[in-house]
Image (cartoon, rainbow, N blue to C red; front, side):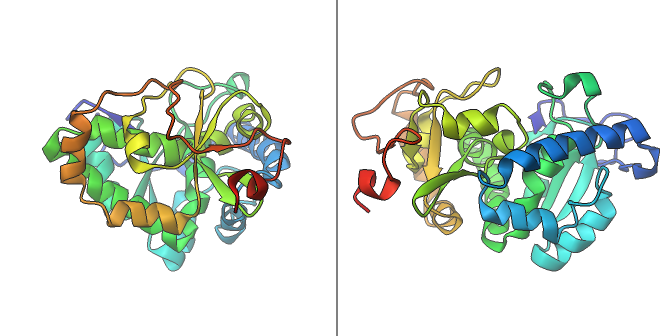
Length: 287
């Protein structure tokens, strides 16, 4: 959720935060949230990683209406020390990383109109809060997000934000996770999308590739249609370990000497998960 402008807009604090102004939401805006929530939860019960579903309940997000960030943050602070802060839209990279590094998740405070249920160019409160926040109640995932923020601040010194952004995109926004003998959703961009929450698991077309840090950080991504491929992590613990146990400085230098990969690229070294409904994962992967 970043942009390049350096000065906060009028009405925003120096860290780009603004009041959520929860009391100003109209009944129609709450109704849009409720419609989106009901539609997604009807799909996600058997698709989302269980930690997402339990996070929704633990944070009280199963109550009607747009969540109040103050109440949401109170519950989240008790669980993992995170809070949710409102911002006017996209924020600069440094601001975004600084908030994450201090366990603050930035979220837009506006919601799409009833005519925009299926597509919105700029992330709104439904994408930011419904899609991202429930997993921040998971201690390991919460630590990963903080580690990512700290890594982002360091990446700025190496001029490597574009490499690190790919890690965020392919995990936090559009990642899949292995859960026993099946794949589940954990990326917020999928969880908040009615169409992609079906496509990502059901369509046989997109390759589902086992997570490899270097592969992920070399791979470009698309922003205007469903993903052409997905990366699959084994666990949040494994994702965090990949973040904490790697010295990203030498890694950035290594990646600079390698060509970027197009989203549709296929490598001989890719470990692919089978197409949906073909064979059990354990049989296909020899696990």
